[in-house]
Amino acid sequence: MTRLNHLLISLLSFTSLFVGSLGGFAEVPSVSQLSDVNSTDWAFQALQSLIERYQCISSNSSYRGDSFLTRYEFAAGIQSCINKLDQMLSSGLQDKVSQEDLNVLQRLQSEFANELKVLTTRIDTLDLRTSQLEAQKFSPTTKLTGQAIFAISSGSFGGDRILSPTGAVITRNQPNVTFLNRFSIDLNTSFVGKDLLKIRLLAGSAGASDSTSGFLEPNFASALDYSIQGRDNQVSLARLYYSFTIAEEVRLTIAPFMVAGDFIDKNRYANVSFNDFSTQAFINNFILLPRPAGAGVVAEWTPKQLPIQIRALYVATNANRPTGSAIVNTLRSSESAELPVLIFPNRGGEQGLFGDPYQGVVELEYFPDKNFALRLQYAGGRVIGSNFNAFGVNFDWGISDRIGVFGRYGLSNYNNTEFGNISPNYWMAGFSFKDLFAQGSITGLAVGQPLIVREIGNASQTNFEAFYNIPINKFIRITPLFQVITNAGNRNENGTIWVGALRTVFSF
Image (cartoon, rainbow, N blue to C red; front, side):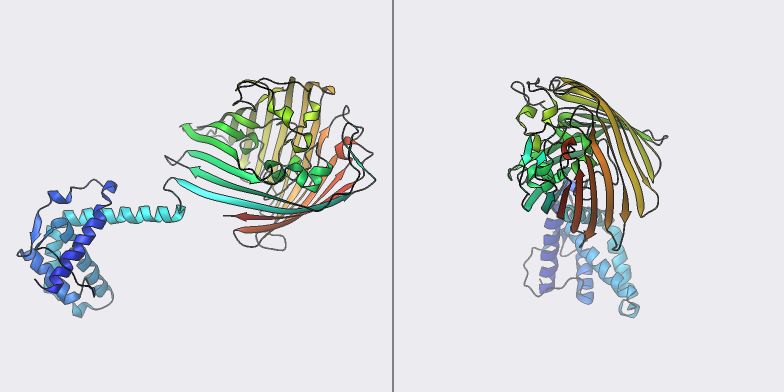
């Protein structure tokens, strides 16, 4: 047997093993079910002649083989010659290819048509699966993404001290420069294409007080929003939920742990603290979501014929705690991500999925076109013995591709709080600009009053923020931001607080 004969047999045997390993991708007969092609058959000798004449297969290695091939292995050699001659013809080398050889190849192709079809199907499937794996680079069903946020914060206040809403002294000393960080990893898994299993792990620095604004005004959501999500760099579960479609227009989310702001009260210009505004009170309606994190369920209905979406959400903070004191009582007010603990009575709540604290939210979103959205909201529930009802409105309007305006308003009543029955109001509004001075940049200006209520303090706190988000590349963005807080903690005795921060976000 010639060296080229050994070459053909060995290479085609390797091709068979490689392609055969993809057997799960297509319904094909086993190689053992196909008739062998013996070295004395006309087809074997015809293909060997083509390989010798046109170098369809070439190698410098030595090979050993048997005196026969399966039809499946043999088809791989035919395909190789088809590709070689096709390449020669498309390159203008028709005079190098004889019509007799083309006739022989056509006869081989016809006789082994089924095997060539199987081979092509398997290779195409392999290419598709390889492309998917290269795109995801982690798992056939799961995409891994991550984010790291570093920020430096510094500020000062007027006067000789800062008071809390109750008149207690928060500090008499000007704050030092602080450094804060947050790191998160998301595992997004889809099993059928339209579902999502989200798992987020998160770690961060000390908490709200590691940003200057959170330290000086810890009660009415002046902290940098991403700072409140970390606790002494301990890794914790930040999201765990599964979303899936139960009907053509209805989507359901079951959540052992979720945050309500991921699903309701969204705003295209003021909702993502690592990308736009960082002041916590500008991320969501401050009085609408007093305890937004926990276990629960979300239902979303999107009628195809109407420009609306209706969302309903239920979340219970202590759903995974069958007994014991309410977890919110263990939070210091300076670390609370929601309405401060100081408002609510110091008594234990109930536990479990339907225990205090809990809340339900219904939101109707109207979007007549891609530039405008209006959201109407109602929330109700119970927080450590205090029943509450809250109404909200939220809008964003893209005046042009580069300029947008937005705002939120809320009114509520909370019964049986530490300050009696209270009816707080809330509002915020601002502008957003894209591509200002730099392509891909985002600029924002906003002002708001998180808790307008006569029973707490003797004034209304007002927050201002301006930021300029600059892209370094598609993975890194740097944002200088500036905060101003007047009448902090609803106390007119407090001087103006000035805070600057430099935020750097790495996404991967």
